[in-house]
Length: 387
Image 1: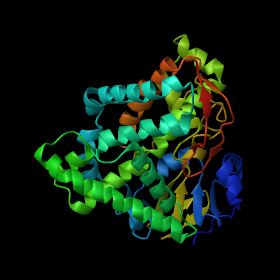
Image 2: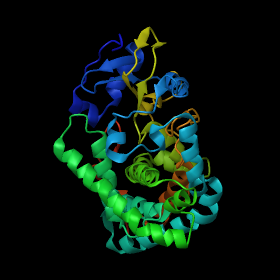
Image 3: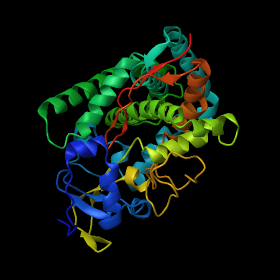
Image 4: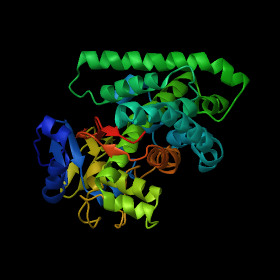
C-alpha cells in the first residue's frame, strides 16, 4: 500500500459532478488515495501524460481486474508486444484510410436513415432516440455483428460498463454483465462462418483474417462495443447540448472561425466521456513524494487532466478559442484509443453536422442532467424542432 494521502469523497456527489473534488486534488494532493474507490488517483494532466507511457510500472495487465474477469483479456489489458500484435490485427478496420473510404459513406447513409425516421416527429430525447441509435447502428457496421440490433448494442455495452465499474460487487450487476458478454459471443459465432466465406473490413472479419484465436476475437469485439457505444452516444448528445447552450460557440462554426472537428476536440476535453483508466503498479515508483507500491490500483483521471489549470487557459469553459491540443481525451500512451479516427468521422464529420442540418430550429425543451465520473455524459436531453 502506498503512502499516498487520503482524500474522501461522497460517492453520489462524485458521480453527479466529480470536477470540484478533482480540482481540490489537483491543487492539494495530485496523487491521492480515495478509500471509497479503493484506488490511488493521479489527477494532473502532465503526470498522466508521462506516467501512462511507463508500462513497466503502470501496467495494463490486470488478471484480477473486473474487465479481464468479465470480458476476457483484450488488448487494453495487455502491454508491449502482446498489445501491439492485437492492435496491428485490428488496424485494417480503424485506419484513417478505411474510415475515409469505407465507413464514412456507410455512416452518412445510416445517419440519414435515423434522421429521416425521427424528423417528422418534431420532438425526441437526443440521448435515447437519436444519439443512442446512431452509436449502436455504427457499431453494427464496424464490428460486423449485423444479427444484433442497435438496441442490443446499447444493452450489452451498458451491461459491460456497469460490470467493470462494479467495485461494490453487486451480484445482480455482475450477472447482467455476464449475460451481455454471452450474447456477444453468440453474435460472433453466428457471423463467423459468413465472414470466413466473404471477408470485409469489419472488426470481426479482420480479426479472423489475422488468425486471432477465439478468446482474442471475443475479448476484442467486446472491448469495441464497450468503448464504442456509450462514449459515442454521450459525445453526440453532449456536443449538441453544448452548442445549443453556448450560442457564441455555435456562431464560431457558422461563420467559419472554427470547424465541427474543433467543437468535437474542445468538447471531449471539457467533458471527457472516458474520465478514468485503471492501471496496476508493477514495481515501486515515486511521484510527488508518494511511493506507489506493487499491486496498488491506480486510476489515470483523464477527465481531471483535461481541466488542469496549469495546462489550459479556461479549463472549466467550453470555448473553442482556446488551444485544446494538449487534451488526453483519447489517452496519451501506447493505449491511445484505436477508434479515434472512426469516432471523429462519425461524430464531427457526419452525425452532429447532419443533426443540425436536418432538424431545423433544434432547441432544448427541458433539463439535461449529466452523470458519471469513470464514464460521463448526459442522461436525458429533451429536444424539439420545426416540422
